[in-house]
Amino acid sequence: MTTTTMPSARTPSARASATSAKKFILPVVTVIGAGALAMVMGVPWTSANEGGAGIRLQADANQGAKLTITTMEPGESVSRNVTIRNSGAEDSRLSFEENAAPATFANGELNLKIEHDGRTVYDGTFGAMNDVSQDVGNLPPGGSSVFTFTVSLPKDAPFANQGEPAVASYSWVNSNTGAE
Image 1 (cartoon, rainbow, N blue to C red):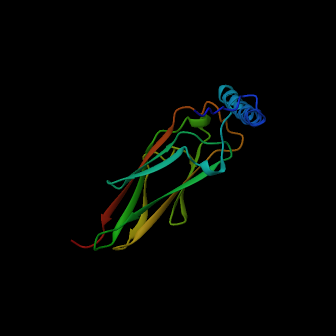
Image 2 (cartoon, one colour; image 1 turned 60 degrees about the horizontal axis):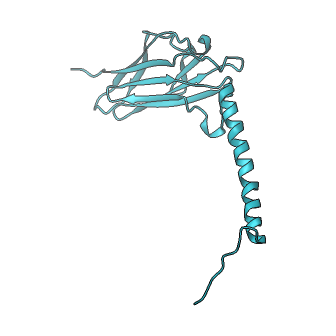
Image 3 (cartoon, rainbow, N blue to C red; image 1 turned 180 degrees about the vertical axis):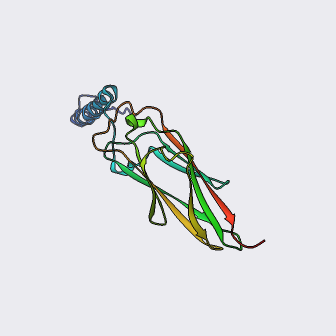
């Protein structure tokens, strides 16, 4: 009969493993505790890779798009694009309209700049272009047009209490310009 003895917890290798585990666990617990404290105190989390994570521009199948801002850092500026295409066989006249209420997000300091193929069609307070239809020109058959929406907050805008999300809907109307 053979008897095998297991090393006791007091061997040098077991003590080294326990010391290594303590050296690892203590910093991890410290980082988690600091993170929890920061969340409780309302410290905003930021990362260079998350720029504009709270800004969403979603196109729909009915030639429209919805721009929603849920969070934004003071001093941040974020752009999103929508491309409109004329799939018809004739020139099309393109008009553009915003449907929104003036935003109370960040005490109304949210700014919106809209460019159509590089030309500024609006630059002002988010939601203030409400119900204004703009003729933005002809779109040839198979042609496309890019609208760029740039949302920004001044550096001195409040981060905390940004309020309800800012939401605006946009619609594009293509009118056939050919003879009937």
